[in-house]
Structure formats: C-alpha cells, structure tokens
Amino acid sequence: MFSDFLPVAAFFAGVVSVLSPCILPVIPAVFAYSTEKGKFRPLAIVSGLSLSFTSMGIVTSLFGATLTAYLGYLNIFAEALLITMGVSLLFDLNIFNVFGNFSSLANSKKEGLFGGLLLGLSLGIVWLPCVGSVLGSILTMVAVSGKITYGALMLFIYSIGFSIPMLLVAYSASFSSKKLQKVSKYGFPLKKVAGLIVLGVGFYMVYQNHFGSF
Image 1 (cartoon, rainbow, N blue to C red):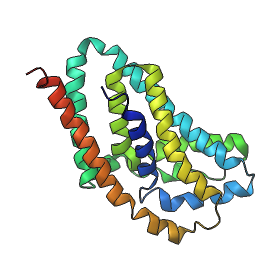
Image 2 (cartoon, rainbow, N blue to C red; image 1 turned 45 degrees about the vertical axis):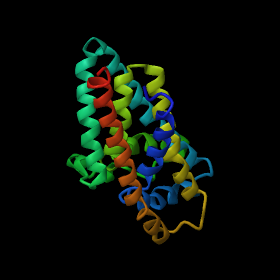
Image 3 (spheres, one colour; image 1 turned 90 degrees about the horizontal axis):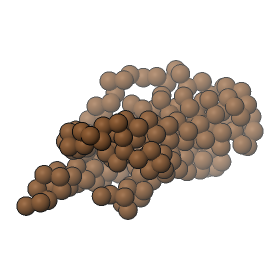
Image 4 (cartoon, rainbow, N blue to C red; image 1 turned 120 degrees about the horizontal axis):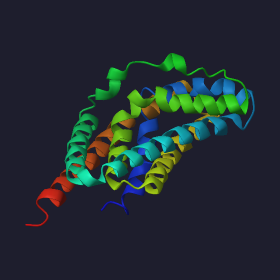
C-alpha cells in the first residue's frame, strides 16, 4: 500500500532522527576520539549502526510474518501505534524516554575498526529513547508488510538517512558543538512535520482498512 512512499519516508525519518537534540550535540564527542584513531573508524561506527537498525527491521518483519493469520488485528494495532507515535512527535511528548538514559554504555574509546563497529551496534540501542517514535513508525509499517527483505531494506535506507549527517560531522572540522546545537533546533519543526506525516499514514490506514470498501 505504501511501498512507493515508504523508502523516501524511511530516509527522511533517519535524517530527522539524527537531528534530535539528544543525539546531534553529542556526535562530536562520539567521533572526536574515533577520527584520531583512523579515517575509516567513523565508517565502522555508522556500519555498526546500520547493522543494528537493519537487524531490527528483519526481526520486526519476522514478527509480522508470523502473525499474517491475524492481519486484521495487526492492522488495528499498527493504526493505533502510528496515531500514538504521530501525536508523540507532533507534541514532542518523548514517550520513549521511559527507557532511561543509557549513554554510559556508549564507550567511544573502544579500539580499532572492530571497536568502532561494536560502538555503532551499541549506539543503535543506546539511542532508542531518542529515536523511538520515528523509528517505531517505520518498524510498524514493516511489521504490517511481513516481508523480511522489504523490512531489511527499509531499515537500511533509514540507517543511510541517519548516517549521512553523522559522517558529515565526523569528517568536517567546521561542525563545532555550538554550531550543532543551533542546527539541532531545526529538529523540532522537522519532528512536527514527521508527526503530521505519521498521523496521516495512520488515519489513511484506518480509512483504507475499515471504510475503503464503502
């Protein structure tokens, strides 16, 4: 139903996620040590992040595939979840902050490329409270599709949108923490736009699944 739209939405969601005020300002600290240890280490970190997010897409698709017999109930759950997440983004409710602050897990001094990969994997979990509403919206649509390849692809596209701003910061000396704090302010209007889009998708699903035949 949203197969043509979702890849673009997934990329946009990744960009919006990294502009979160609890992610963007700390990126210089994450990469400060990394770039000193080798020019390819930031790539290892974002590769770990991509692997983490793509794995979430695969697991979510498997979950959806096992529930295809209950697709009607899954659609209702997805509709409710998307509308909830849309409202959360629109009014900046941060409902996923109940997971707490796991920033202490992100040890930016793990050595080597493999250490960077492990750091990226851990950051995919550490930053869940910051990206929960946006990422959850993509995962919800993936679960409804129930297609593993499609789910992996959508989350990989999401991770590309997430990774590009991070690499720009990592390889550009002009991005200071103070400048990034200014840039992060644009995350708020973008989150509201994302909230409206997610709400629209949720209400469209309600119409399509329950009133489209009338």
